[in-house]
Amino acid sequence: RDVEVAETELRSGGIFNVSLDGQALAPIDEDYTVFVQVLNEQDQIVGQADAWPLQGTYPTSAWRVGELIENDPYAVQLAQELPAGNYRLIVGLYRLADAQRLPVLDGDGSPVDDKYVRRGLVVAP
Image (spheres, rainbow, N blue to C red):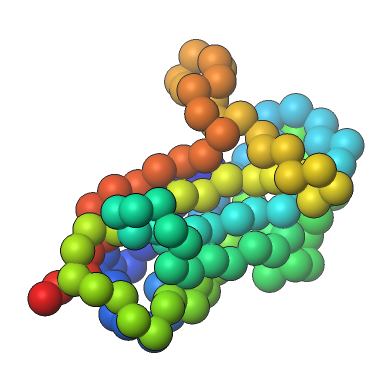
């Protein structure tokens, strides 16, 4: 999946918008939930959105091989009190029944993690 953020400065109590692009590389027999989380430096979640793709309207089991899913929006409600500091975004897919995450693959198709991580989000002093 590609992850796009409009800005990297977070605001206490604000909405952090994220847009995702994805593609089914193989048939998907199950429905996976997308998670989008903002974490502080202590690995605490300060904002989270979980949903099926395209605002819950397009489950992954309906995706066709090779199909591009573009501009999948997520609005993450941030905590009311965010101290100044560095934050990061993590994004991935999981099976709701057992919370098993799908692996993130590198360019060669090898698993490298169970989430995408983007650093560089900040709350200014």
